Image (cartoon, rainbow, N blue to C red; front, side):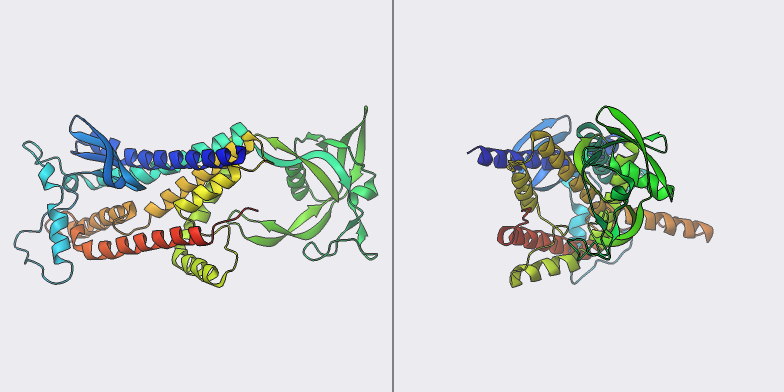
Length: 430
């Protein structure tokens, strides 16, 4: 019963976090829009039927039934057709005109100069970038809290066991062979329960610092070791070996690393701001890499599901899958509540990094598409100005509505596919 409650709690924690992240994103659009005088009739979290709403001033704030996104309504998102332009016919003509006329019902007396397309280009970019930027900031803050406040598990400086050899392979070999070299720790006389206090006089608090020091200072090192009631200085020369290392993107690659030949206890330690920011930057970069190959990743995910193969833990996942993983982590009896909280915060941080990267894709209806349209308009106006031509006016992004509809359908289809895969072939952490 306790595990079930923990599972439900984990799902609720992430669900609330997702809702907050969506609302926080839309707030990034809302605040600058109001600051620049744009009329914003609606601020909504979710889509579909309205569950709750309340009007404050000229804006209706509400929550809708389907928690797969959110939006704000700004009048004049698309400019009117240029004077003398011929009415368009064929595919998408109705969509283009609907986009131009959208939200006109919210235009009242005095709103004639409060439309989005009338703003200077830089203000439009600020409004559209505000949403993704808020997700980026939230992701960094959550990472700082998880890494700096709760901490992460690292290899401590206390030695639990001393290995006998330097394995000839760190991929296939399990036990030592007669031809393997003796492990540096054993050669130096290190023992189980020794606690390394400093390396070459530099104090250390975890084994990662020792490894980093050894990488930067090749050759013999002097370990200051606490053994029982006495402190000893022990000389040790680590072996440099090719070892598999997990990168930030989740892939494994062989890297040359110092090897001491010790088994270490783990300890939770707070990480400094620099490491938290470095992790955030790496996570954002990895997310952009995933986005670049998203269609291929989804096809591979569907293929693995159909063939019954185990899915890639670092692949795309739906909100349903995120909830499943959160519940599984929360119900893990081997983790304490700080472990569960830290994992939950990092899941939400990763989600916000994904929202940032996804919304920066330069396609409508995503924020990046509006930003790209504004940049195009700026470049076009610059060229017209250089050629001493009349101001061409705002970029008519309404003409892209047929493509926008195709992108929207593709995004909905991909979301439904991911949800279906997560129900049939859920991510398993076991």
